[in-house]
Structure formats: structure tokens, C-alpha cells
Image (cartoon, rainbow, N blue to C red; front, top):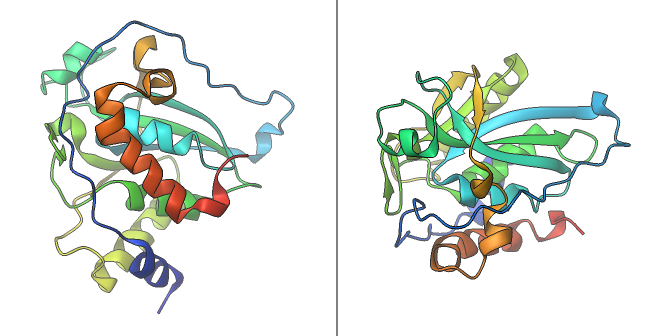
Length: 219
């Protein structure tokens, strides 16, 4: 049994259903994500991931040791410079996603993917809980062969181990462009944690992450 099989066989819990849409809109705070400017940029790598509402995925990766920045935005569509409203129509082709930049000396692509497949359901096509539409699809957008092979490997391992009762439908495509979402979408959970969507949908996902990866939470 390989490491992926052992890992996911032990940690998978039932996914929390969503009760509202992440389309709720509020005031527009600026993102407070900061990067250590003294860091050796040669050690940094970036991966783009889609797993439903980007507020959820953003909040989780912000808490993972080794991640230096997370940006919410859109990718894999055909419309240039889309707005959030454009993407909500479902006609832009874009997925809500996060762009995760991490320090390879503190975390790994392997761990990034383990978190990804723990905190969202990769078997529901164009949907996470009550958030439905092509913009909420599951996707990995790789920048090089290393990222592609790592993604293929974990998907194959999860499938072989039958971790999920349904087939994995995660979209695996080469990265093209990333469009950063409006400022009020950045750092959303940290800014608006008391709001209903944050409490009902995001918080359980964050708590699940903190339970499974308790030794990998940022100090």
C-alpha cells in the first residue's frame, strides 16, 4: 500500500454540505496576505487549484505551514479579464480558483495535493455542496511536468484505493492565465469570519483541515 493510499484511507471524513452560495457580497477590504521579502525566491513554486468557492480553499491554504501567499481568482476560461459577475453567469468558462505560492523547503507539492483532496469533494461535477455551476468545478492547473505527474499519481492512487465511492472528476489541464478576483474577495474568511457563509460552510472545512493537519498549521 503506497503512502497516498495509507494517508487517505485514514483521514477522509464525510464532506460538509453547503447551505448558501459564496455569491454573497459585502464591503471591500484589502487583502492582508503578506510575503516574507527576505525569502529565497528560488525555493518558491506556484500551483493553481479549483475546489469550489475560492473563499474556502483560500482560507485553508493560508493556514498551511510553508505557504507564503494565496490569491483568489479565475482560470481556465475564455473570457479576458472577467469580473466576479461575469464568472457567476457560467458563460465565461472560468473556474473560481486559488493561486498558491509555497516554499518548497517548508512544504511540498505532495502535501499541497493531500490538503486539496481532503478539503473538497472531487467527485461532484461542477458543484460543491449548494454552490453549483461550472465555476465551482474541481481542477488542477499544472505549470510543468512535475506538477502534472504528481497530480496524476495522487488521482490514480485515490482511485485505486477507492477512497471515494464515485469517480474523481477533477479537471487536469495545463495552466494558461490567472485573473485575480476583486479586492473584496481576497482574504475573505479572515476578514468576515462571523458571517453566515463563513460559519456554515468555510469554518467546518477549516476545522477539518486543522484536525487532519494539526502538526502542519502555521504558528
